[in-house]
Amino acid sequence: MLLAVLGGCGLVRDDIATTVVARPGKFAFYDCPLLGQTLTRTRARIAEYERMTARAAQSPGGAAIANLSYRAEYLSARGDETELVAALKEKNCQAESAWTSERVVY
Image: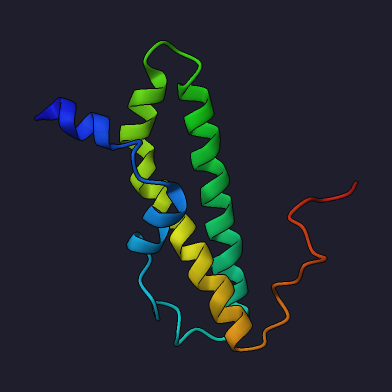
């Protein structure tokens, strides 16, 4: 039973799993500033999950453990990001732009 569950973890593509996990309309009642703040926090969470997964993958068997530990939260955060971007576009908010980035220039 456990082998079937472990074997099935990698069979679903991330983009499909993200759409299954996302809840449409979750951010419908947020205003533009709150959508922008939530998107920034969600992207920070995604980056943290990616860092933790990469760190865990450096050890033997770490990739499997990281997949079991972080994949559900990672996919949930990616689904939230997709819904937030859609809500920003739907409300014509200026927080999301193709020309902005999360990087800081010193």
